[in-house]
Amino acid sequence: MLNKGDKQPRKKSKHIQQLLAIVFLLLTGGLFYYLFSPEESDLFPKCVFHSMTGLDCPGCGSQRAIHHLLHLRIKEAFLSNALLILVIPYIILCIYIEYFGGKEKFPKIRKIVFSKTAIWGILIIILLFWIGRNLI
Image 1 (spheres, rainbow, N blue to C red):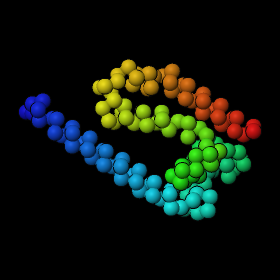
Image 2 (image 1 turned 90 degrees about the horizontal axis):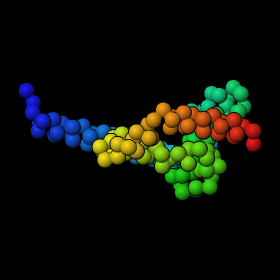
Image 3 (image 1 turned 135 degrees about the horizontal axis):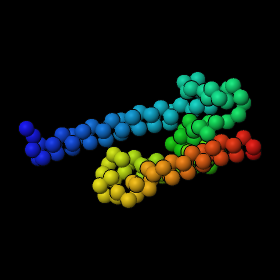
Image 4 (image 1 turned 45 degrees about the vertical axis):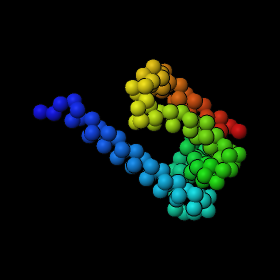
């Protein structure tokens, strides 16, 4: 039978593995998006919704936005997909809280960030963005 002391190294090892996996994926994906432009390359998937309707979905322009962001072209990134650029801090906060010790350090913030109210608010913002970007 394991005592509490035996579980800590496994937990820490799992945490390090998760961190390394995330870093590897971010670096690999980042390099790919840095080297290849989604506007000029056929390597990137096209939006099925846009192909069928001619309208932009909430995610349309995200790949271009990431490419521009990696080249420090903030204005172009924002124009490609403003919502993605605006939610990056929220995404980083969620990842920190869920995977890197934020649960224990900031339980009140975690409760707010992952609450039903927050989820519904995000859904409404996405829907409004979806409608708004197709009206302009």
